[in-house]
Amino acid sequence: MIHSDAWLGLHNPYLVDVGNGHQLHPDVAKAFTAMQSHAAIDGQDIQIVSSYRGFQRQLSIWNRKWTGELPLLDENEQRLDVAALTDEQKVYAILTWSALPGGSRHHWGTDLDVFDKSAVDACGGKLDLVDAEYRDGGPCFALACWMGNHLAEHGFMRPFMRNNGGVATELWHLSYAPTAAEFEALRNPEQLRRCIEHADMQGKSTVLTLFDELYPRYVLNEGLKA
Ligand SMILES: [Zn+2]
Image (cartoon, rainbow, N blue to C red; front, side):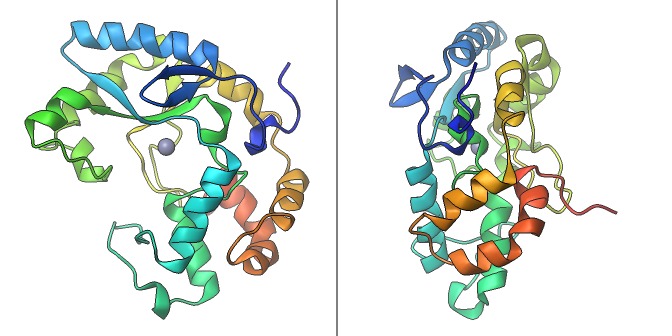
């Protein structure tokens, strides 16, 4: 049984090291290693960009995007001028690409961002983690196609395949469905609200004012309902 607040990323005792500073839930690490071997046979060098991130790490990303220390992008990946945005606009802009601290699937050890390392290295080694890199003509296009055919047989799915007005499309973001389902079942808006109330977070009052809308739209990624 997973502890009821483990989904918030404050404390996750279910992690193992998988190399290069990355950590995953043990069941996810095992499934990912098996999938990597399968992919290698098919010529795909699937490697991790980002794996487990705790609450403090997500909070740091949030705060640096708020102040403009990290680039803030619109849904078409165009850079926004932070100084020209209202606090509300900043909240929506950040949430298109980054989760609320406490609301990231990366807190669970079940989700990871991946790329084709050999293909990227062959193009100079630079990866920006943008949509075009995973589309026709991009270095990770073949991997994206391979994943479309083979993720499910290894238990993985992609939760951000379509932008419904919530989180942007992220073809690189994988989730190990059996274990992620256990964390999804724990999600609870009041727990997250309290967690944010206690955090040293930029834009906190705006987030709390909008919280009832933000939670389903971005945390559950239900987007904008028609
Ligand atoms: Zn991700």
